[in-house]
Amino acid sequence: MASRADGTLEYVIGRSRCGKTTYLQQRVANHDRVLVWDIEGQWAMLPGYKEIAGKTSKKKNAEALIDALVNAGEKAKIAYQPGSAAEFETFCQCAMVWGFDAPCSIVAEELADVSNQGKAPDSWGVLVRRSMKYDVNVYGISQRPQESDKTILGNAKVVTVFAPNTDADRDYLVKKLGIAAEKIPTESLKYVNRFNDGRMTSGTLKF
Image (cartoon, rainbow, N blue to C red; front, side, top):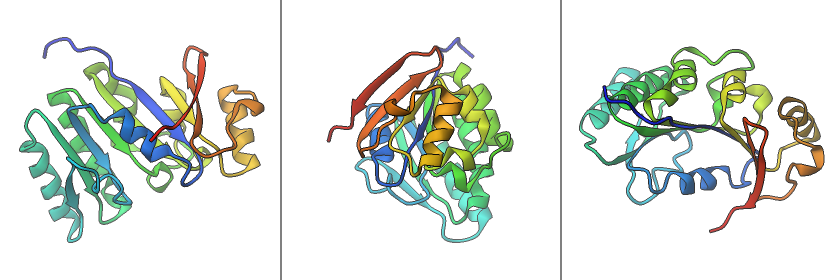
């Protein structure tokens, strides 16, 4: 395999309907190969995305996903709507193989549904810890980081924080990220980027 540039690992946090998904949709808009764990079907509605909807057995869902990735070509955007959270392990296995084949971007929506407060589970953990060396970009989204795995929070090159749900969520982010409470947004569409070298930037989502 030829040497590749580093990918990125970004964790996007914030309450429902604050702009997280739209922010990431804009981030990957110009990426050639994108695979999304699209639990709510928000990505499947975007122009250019191929929808793989899990509506039958777990085995058949996996076969449909694998077939789509094998036949994706050099440019493909795939939104996978699982039949259940139990399919996340297979999704992550497929994502890692796809990324090993060629650089790509992987998006995982609603991490609290498929991980917990401990170490990132199984193949999701492999993606988070190892994929960047293959020029694979991994983006995770969560409304409540306390309910999601600590691996992505600890390994992320950048954590993007939108307005949190509660004061407890805000306090958690202050403690874990070292962001001053007054820097954390309270309004939807506003965000701060906290980089792993300590730098911080802020912005407002534009449509």
